[in-house]
Image 1 (tube, rainbow, N blue to C red):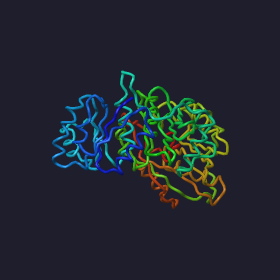
Image 2 (cartoon, rainbow, N blue to C red):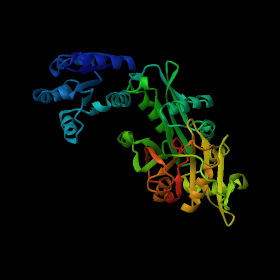
Image 3 (cartoon, helix red, strand yellow):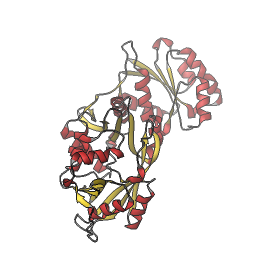
Length: 409
């Protein structure tokens, strides 16, 4: 059993932290102290592995006493918790002997990951989240992740789950607490060097308890050694950066209305008239690695319409529209020229029932794509941050007028 010393002068906060630790970690024994002086009275024979210390409540005299804790309990990890997240404050904590600084703004997530990462040892003592199991999803369970995504307002396609699962049968993880699914993540491998992370969701009532960071780590482990991409909400950018992700650019979701004048473009044809090999060869220009398995399922999706632009019997663009929980989404929309992109876009939006919402996810760096959304009166819905752990893929972003899907890249 691991022993922790919890130093917190405010009884309510001390009890709250104790309850959270006891509810989420096992096995552990918690010794409470209202200040550093009280903590120094605890016998070294208690052999604490962790000292949790509220830095915000320390007086100047107590700051001077912090190194005494390190000398009295040399085997313990000293974890300081604070609201002041500035480099100067972190430096002061480190100089005083604090080995890990945890920001109170992300307290439960950061504290959970710190405890689990640093405190498992080789002497048979370990700390784990109680009754929490992470495993690979079955095909049926992917439906659950899609439902959660819909509840978050991501508006997935009605038949996306089959396509997602076909991309990587082992690339979807579920976290279960006492047998109940409470967390998900997709970590899909493409080819030999790329992976994409999505569906990172924890049920609202279980957030802030460390479950999310654990399934995140399992997912990142599955994609170890690959360049990993994601489309994350802008508010989480700083957290993703802590895992090694770097911002490449923003993707923007726009909403418009289906219907409009049906124009017969001579070069726009159904993809059924094009071989899959021709399609896959063209699609490869727009993705960092091989995604033929996903592509084959994606363009065969029930209820979808797929069109291509031909020039001298060669594919010069293609797009797809599919039914979603609300309206329709166009994605991908790839084209060699803005003219081909507009022709495909027009043809797709007029091919479904009129007056319905349609969505297009556009890389912000493609000015011609932004001009297309403006021309057709589309309004901005939300933005994501496209991020990568490795080098940014060398893709023709000026020809990407619509992202295939935020969930799988």
